[in-house]
Image (cartoon, rainbow, N blue to C red; front, side, top):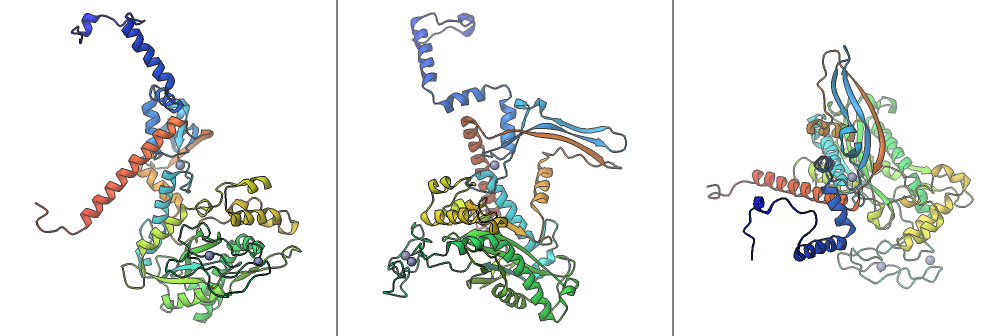
Length: 499
Ligand SMILES: [Zn+2]
Ligand SMILES: [Zn+2]
Ligand SMILES: [Zn+2]
């Protein structure tokens, strides 16, 4: 029977359940609470915090970052002329006296929301260098632009994915290496086959050559750019020192680990006039000439390693597999478009050695290499870094600190100064757009900013992580819906549908 008493007639709630039924229900509730997982109990604690709405607003502002950094401090902006305070922000009034900011990790395996934002920034950074915008002249659309892929040479035969039904390795049938292993493999490997990228004979594989190539790849790229500039000058019949008076060569490049765990580079290369994107390159600087010069420079560029009794003196050069593609503003046959190139490069910046089956964190001892959940091939590469890293003549390569990256210590994305905008400028533009910097319009005479910040912690509790991941999913859904809306608006309407 349901009670017909109004809340007023029932009077104030009793401190202790009076009836047996009420006592049973209270005990059941206590039992239910006891049975809750620690995450659920943490969740109940969190939502009952008086400043929960403000904490949630902070997490929304980080885009649902999976590993936020907490800062404590203050910023004051004053009028430079008379010292009047124009804006003041202090974390004292924030939950826990701290402010959550994004971790900004580019790796998808570490933080999906931040890696998505970083990939988006990379897209705009690369695209503005091809299409103009974000402070870059639109003239760049008319300048010679190419998409270049450079690879490492072979360090020994590895199993290959065979999408066209061919066999993995059918040449050299019947021959064996000195270790008695066959030079052939009559299997067909799918893309996801763990054998793909593993050497046919680990004992024949040149592991020192592989990690030394990685350790010198940055210098090899720099040498390649010098060589390309020198060859451009030679082709134009001008002194190399005067090339800058005629044109500039700009690039944005991204490093990617292939299945054999060797890095290769994808780069957008562009020719501008002497003052960068806003000036046209000379008429002789055609895309065809640029392609020839890049191919020549890739074949010629090399660096030498220091001599070591363990490895000798090695010549470090690019592999013969290279690719040069024209980039077009519109979809033409044989050319890739600006948008496709920007999306292609952006995809790689959120990847890491972890996506290629390696470790995303540094190793500090030999045991962590032995115990790492990686393939035998990657373990051998990391072990080689560790072994060579102890040699005094190779100390400058810092191989032990970069053993997890298999000796490669370059940035994933690098670009020349004049290619386009920077990550910093893109972030500032976004922060101003969202108003999160509390931007104060500069008065005549300017403003003075005083900031004091310190790191006070990072990361989420279990319940905070659940909420942040929900926030990230919500933002991603909204972004996809917005994108679908934009695509619908762009697509031509079918007659009769718009009524
Ligand atoms: Zn993050
Ligand atoms: Zn095979
Ligand atoms: Zn062998």
